[in-house]
Image (cartoon, rainbow, N blue to C red; front, top):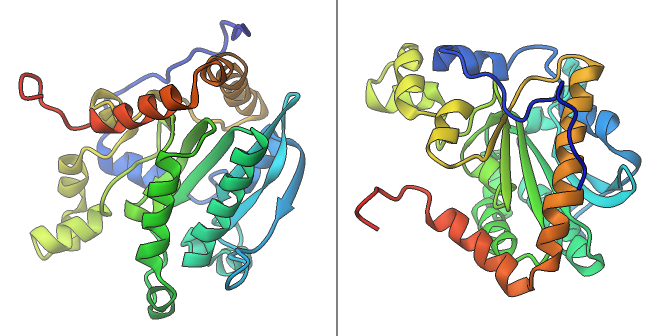
Length: 280
């Protein structure tokens, strides 16, 4: 078992920061993106492109690399930093071919016995007409179905925004972890406010009511861990230690399980979300 040094505590401190400020922080300019996490956590990374059906979606980076000495498959939504990069990456809004590209790599990970690390940061899947024409809903739904029965361990790490099915399509995992200033919600606060009050300006009230922060979701059992923000090389190292511990200790135990037990545990993890005590 690999122990984590004391200076890298498991949980982030939970302070009474208003939900709308957490949302604003998740969207802040200069925030590390999926590519930054790959560069700081994964060695010998080799990127793979395309879904073998339509093309290559630049909004998601997929490939294989090593975390310490363990081969891992990495699937990271990428928003980009500069305006040019953001346009190239479609602001992290994946097309159907992006979800198919991700699933292709998941199935390869299953075939070769590699754990899967998903890095999630998206306001939502791309909602343009062409995405609908190419089967956006079906692509996301297939990911949900296939990830639930994928015969290899999965970690999903939320590093910023976690919008609706766009995020869920990479978040059916054995462990769902969130940075302290990330969120995960069926709808954006602005969208919710527009529907409920016909006023997007009431996003503060909507954000509070949605209970979308990492701290709220930890209490609700949606996420297992809240991690402090990696705003320096030392803090990236801390996330590295957490993932290393999960891969070498927790996931090695998972691999000792039968496939049936691994899948049953994943299934039960999601079945228990939303249960009200006394009404199971």
